[in-house]
Length: 68
Image (cartoon, rainbow, N blue to C red; front, top):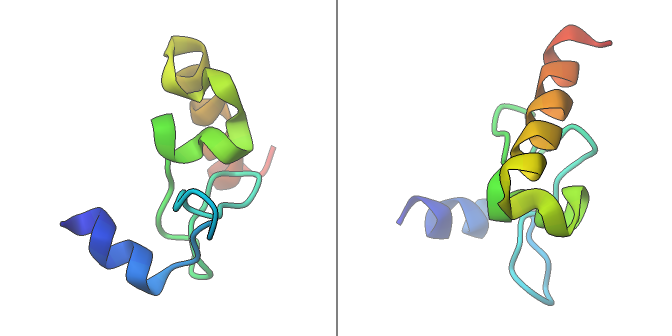
C-alpha cells in the first residue's frame, strides 16, 4: 500500500528493502518523511523495534527540527 508506493520512488536497500535514511531518519531528498520502528533499523540498530529504539528515533527526529 503506502510503503509499496513510497519504496518505488524513494531509495531503499537492495539487500533487504529497508528505507535508506539519513542520521535524522529522513527518507528521501525532500526530507519530509521520517521513519521509526522497524523502518529505522538500518540507522538506529537492533533496538529500533522496541521502546528504547522509539526513544532514540524520537531524539533524532526532534534534532532534525530543532537543529540541536
